[in-house]
Image 1 (tube, rainbow, N blue to C red):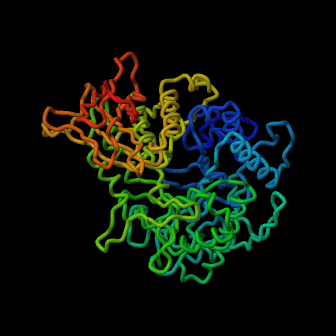
Image 2: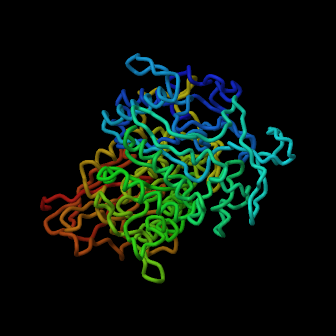
Length: 608
C-alpha cells in the first residue's frame, strides 16, 4: 500500500489544488493520506531492501489519479489514499510522484511528468531484478458524478442521498450528473479522448467519460456479499459502477478502452502484470473479452505478463471460474492467468491466527490445497488446467496470501504473537503457490486495534513513520525479516519448494480426539528424485510426527533409497538443539520444536 510504506518526498503530501485537510502529518488517521509515495519505495529499492528480503515482484495499490475524497464511503468520509477511486486512468496520482528524478532532473508538472516518474520507478525495479504488478480497477470509478436528488443542478456535498442512491433493479437513476469539486479532484472521468504519453499516441475514445458507460443503478446494501446479480450491477457505496453487460450497446467501446489503456501500461510504461480488483462484481463476459483482446494486442509479449484477479470468495469453484472463459466449451484457453487464493487464506488463518498458545486444525487447510485440483459434479475442473502463453496453468500461478489491505487485513493483531506471525509467513513460503507478503509483515508489524475473527481496515498503518518508526536497517536486523530472508533464499536454492507437487503427510494425531497442531507435507519433483519435507508445529509444546502407532512413511513414488532427510532450516530455532537427520526410506518420527517450522531436504548420503 504505497501511501502507507514510506514518505520519501514530503513535497507531494499536499499536491497543488488539493484540500490540505486530507493529509495527516501525524500519520495516524487511517481515513486520510499519510504521505507514502513512489520515492519511498525507490529509496528501499536502491538500498537493496527488497533484494535482501528475497522479494521478486512488487504489487502496488492502484497508482492512477484518484478522487481525493469521498463523502460517504463504508464507515464514513475518507480520502482516496488507497487508489481504488480512479478519476483519470492515464495520469498518475500526484500524491505518489515527485518533481525531480533520483538523479536530480526535473519532471514536467503534468501527466507526462508524472508518467515519466512512474516509468523510471519501473525501470529501477527492473534494474534491481524485481517485476512490478499494477493493481487495476475496471468495475468502477470514484464518485465522479452525483445523483441530483433535489433537482437543483448542484452537488450538495453534505446530502448523503446525492452521493448514494438506493439500488434500482429496473432501469437506472436518470438524474446522474458529472460533479466538479477541484479540491477533492472530483471531476468527469478521464481520458475523454486521445492522449500522447511517453512518446506514444494512445487512441482513447473517451468511453470512460460517457455517462452511458455506467449503470447508475445505485447502491444495494449487502450486495458486496450477494450472488444474485445485484453485486454485478450496483454501485459500491458512492463509487460509480461501469455497465459491463456484454449485451449492452456500449460494451465493445468500454472493453476496447480498457485494452488501450492497459496495453500502454504493460508495454510502454513497462509493468509486468495486472492484479485486477473486484472480479466477481463484473459480468464474466467482460473478462472474456478483455483478457482475449489484451493478449491479442500484446502479441508474443503476452507470455511475459501475468493477469491475476481478486475474487473475494472462499469457494474454489467460484475462484477457479474466472480462470475459464464463460464459453469454455468452445474456447478452453485461460481467461485470467490465476487468482488470489482466498480459500487458502481463510483456512491458513483458521489454523494459525489464534491468541496466545491456541491453534486450530490444519485439516481444512490441507483440503483447501487439494481442492485446487478438484472438479464439480460435471467433472469440470475448478481451475483451468490448460497452460497459458507462458506454458503454466492457473494452479501453478495461483497467488497465496495470509493477509492483505482489505477487510481481512493484518495477520498480526491484538493477541497474535510475533512468533506466530513468523510461523504463518514460513507456512506461506513453503506451500504451493506464488506467495504474497503484505508490507510490514517482515517486521511483524502489529495492528493493536484489530481482532481475530473481525474484519477491519485498521491495519493500513504507515510503516516507516517520520516520528517513532523503524529504520530500514532496524527492520533488516529484525528476527522476522531475517527469517523470511532465509526462507526465500532456501526457495531459490530448492526448486521443489517453488514448483514441486504437494504430498500431505500428517495432519492429526491419531491417538487423540484433539488435533496436536502439527502439519507435515512433502514437496516433490515429478520424477520423485528431488523432494523436501516440511513439518509445522503450531502448539507451544515440542511435538513429533509419531504417536507410537502411526508414523510417517514417504510414498513409493519418491526415490528414498539411499537418501537422508537433512534439516535445512528451523524457524525460530534460537538456542534449541539441532534437529537430527533421518533415513528417508524409514518411518519418519520427525521432531519439531514448539511454534516452529522445519524444512528437511533429501540428500544422497547413506546413513551409517
